[in-house]
Length: 348
Ligand code: UD1
Image (cartoon, rainbow, N blue to C red):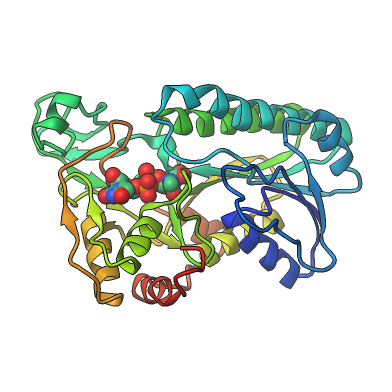
């Protein structure tokens, strides 16, 4: 297929691009190479790939870039946590206005196939199981509770401790920060577009992605990258909360494979797919695994917290396996060992 890949110069984008090329697709990349992400030497696309340096909010550039394309993989976005209120306009503009510009141009050009990078953060605290009230949706954690070291979100009805449940794609949205809100809105716009135009939209709700090329020392560095950088510099990883918060760390190659599969196979209606390994880990456990692999200092549990963080982000990716036939191939131990073995200068 002829595919427009937005954000193709980014961390996940480069892996998606490589995979698309290996699968024989023709790819055009649209990327603004925004300065807060792309520091140092400018990115050079692989041979045969056309790079258009433009912002996805640039109507003319987007419409031009869509000429002759059959599908779009939309990864270009401002990522991060969205805790600083001053960043709110940029999330709304880069992610939501940008997606609006892209979808309108796709409608005009008759390009009817979209694969969108979304996120697990759209579910907020997800689902918990209360001994008395069954499956419940925990509310936002109170700052006073966090400050007191009380990190687990309680049952909203009786305050009891909850057991964590994996969320599926039907779980209602409950975004807790500007980034999460912008991802939820992107999905809604894409669904509106698909219904109005008869196009297909696959929303890929990524878990915590790690692997070669991970951003470091930028506002977009994920925790695995931050810990690996600290350990390489001989410093202990600083684990927030009590380290018991759970995430599903998924290798970027597996994420790229899921994204390309969705682009190739999903050709009708609106569908969402959680993209995770299926094996949640604690952040403290991940820090220890990296410290062991790099033979660095033991992680320090700091009790610090970020207000916009959710406690546990763990979802069920069965749908992706069942509908698209995807299987993650890189296990946690192998992935962490690879991250640890990357040379100090390499990303991550
Ligand atoms: C991450 C992604 C987000 C994606 C989401 C999907 C990044 C920067 N963010 O959000 O784009 O949508 O996964 O699930 O990749 N922590 C520490 N020490 C640190 C930094 C963080 O303990 O120095 C903890 C945080 O408190 C949090 C966990 O590590 O509990 C993960 O944080 P982070 O890597 O920033 O990712 P998410 O917020 O999960």
